[in-house]
Length: 64
Image 1: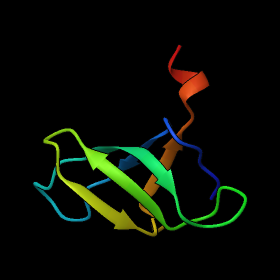
Image 2: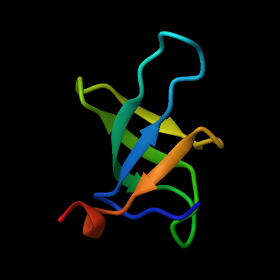
Image 3: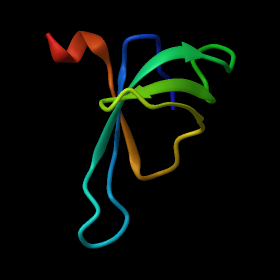
Image 4: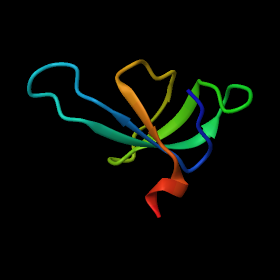
């Protein structure tokens, strides 16, 4: 998985009733775009995460 600052991570819910979450990459802590990433969720919560197979990267150029 490769991401840059400004990309969105779509984290799919893993159980029935759990909604998908979207987080914006605010800092790439790995080398060459690799995880871990510092992310900010829509509610303002920030976290450091290494996304798993339930996560999709939406590159900021795809949003335009």
